[in-house]
Amino acid sequence: MTQLNRRHFLKLSAGAAAASSLTLPHFAHAGTQKVVIIGGGVGGATAARYLKIADPAVEVILVEPKKTYHTCFMSNEVLSGERKMESISFGYDNIAKMGVKVIHSAAKAIDATKKVVTLVDESSVAYDRLIVSPGIDFKWEDLEGYDAEVAKKIPHAWQAGEQTKTLRKQLEEMKDGGTVIIGVTPPNNSFRCPPGPYERTGLIASYLKHHKPKSKVLVLDAKEKFSKQGLFVAGWKDRYGYGTDNSMIDWVPASKEGKIVAVNAADNTVVAGELEDSHKGDVINIIPPQKAGKIAFIAGLTDKTGWCPVNKKTFESTIHKDIYVIGDASIASKMPKSGYSANSQAKVCAVAVISSLKGTEMVVPSYVNTCYSAIDSDYGISVAAVYRYSDADNMIMPVKGAGGLSPADASAADRKREIGYAHSWFNNVTKDIFG
Image 1 (tube, rainbow, N blue to C red):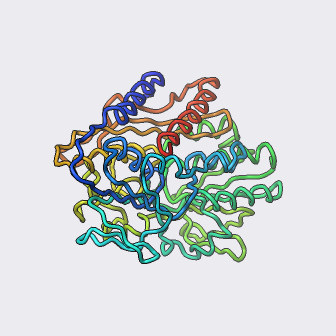
Image 2 (image 1 turned 135 degrees about the vertical axis):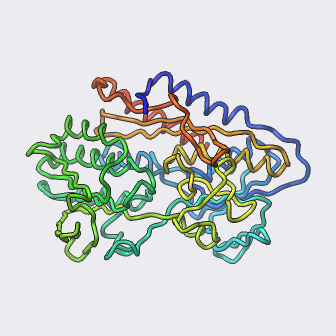
Image 3 (image 1 turned 90 degrees about the vertical axis):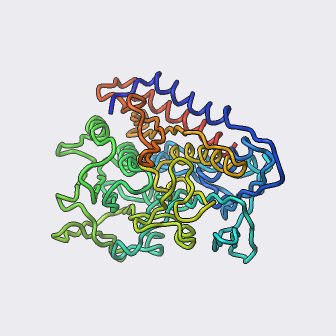
């Protein structure tokens, strides 16, 4: 991947965003048609807004149990103390003002034949088209000793909100000289936000460096390499002495006994590697193996991978007609599972749904993604890409030359500037999602 020319990419991504919002087709209305969206996270909330932009006459119903959504992106800054929980908290009032009917409930079942969604209170909602954006669930069965109950004590914080608060409180209460264990247990990058664990590593180390400087962060990883590894390692060396005897961070890959095979909540230990070494942590953060959200399984939208296969041009399920799956739950290779990916996919899906309702041909879409990562409060890195749909193999492919990585030799001023870009992106994208 080429190094990113920041100004050039910002122009590209701004253009892509403008195209998504300003050139959406507007269709003549011929009778009320109904689109139901399950899940009010990044994908679902964006889809709701852009459906109304594309055709205000279409009835849009958003089903989401929570009245407040917490973004996972930027939640690691809550852990470092750089950000307040309130700043990653968003409601649905602005979406409702656009004419979207917001139902604060959870979907219990989907009848793909009758086109009906049943809610947990046994009420039902009919649809002409259905968008499912359920986010992730966890494969508790894949890690011995770790389940939803244990996660109350040993948090994953991979769904932001209460889990974020729990982990932050544990860091605040930890003694100076303690050890924070971050267990990255998914064996590959098929999980939400592949760079996220390593951003978390740096930002927890940042908090410890300023408040508990005798402490350490131990990363036990089921993988051999990770996203933006060279940039992360360079940042860890610069800020936390990585690779030296005084390093605040120790990263252990699977080949060096880093794969966690069991968790023991009773004594706050994890067991890792073929030698089954025991590691005790003062604070333990487990990032479990993941799969599509529960309703996707109930509705039969998943395949053997645990994720949802889709036509990547439209995000219509390849299993059930007139049902679309976006965001983390979908198989959208080669796009990563990220918030910005979900936002971009939702806009494409909105156009596809409206095109389907009106019987018009869907345009060939483009997509965009940027993943910003903070290593310290003034040290940021990023990876960015523009994608285009390839009909030949139903793939979302990176556009050659349109994106790249932060330069390896960037100056301190550039690294600080990346943090500013990240915060600006956050403000803009959350405005785009929630209004």
